[in-house]
Amino acid sequence: MRTVYLDSIRNHQPTLDHVAWLGELGGQVRTVPTLPIRMIIADRTHAVLPLDTDDARAGAVVLTGAGTVTALSALFESIWTDATTLGTPSPIPPDQMTPQERAALELLTHGHTDESIAKRLGVSPRTARRIAADLLDRLDARSRFQAGVHAVQDGWLPASR
Image (tube, rainbow, N blue to C red; front, side, top):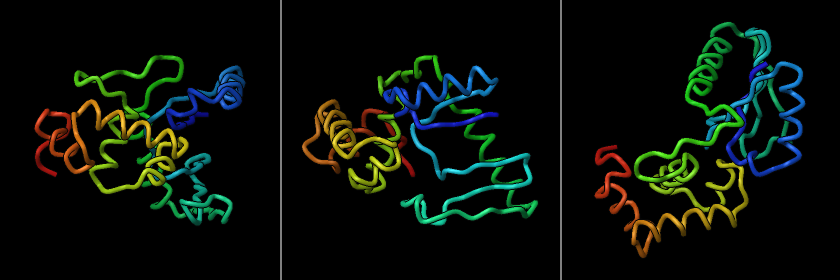
């Protein structure tokens, strides 16, 4: 069994305990700053997806179509390849942003609110606000717009999108 969690689990002891248990049973766990969608794939024949990505309690759908499950499996493999093995420190790029900060900066450039960023990163809105404030401070910016401009000028983000 291979599982990809959000980086934020590194700060949540009950989840880390669960992950340790999975590891004892032979499971492998990696983490990423953000996930495009949460899903479960079983035997590459069934995929379980939430009906509402903002509210997992709304229910789920089970997909069995070979084309759809193959595409979702490819998405998982892509995410798995780029994910960091749990237990190893997250790599810090040359511009000194953690993967979580880089993901937050990308979300900021797309106009996401702190609440939306928090949901995507799996952190509290307060933590998302702190990450954004830290980025603005490090970029010497007084607004999110100015932070985006400085991020491009300083090479933290590519100039063309």
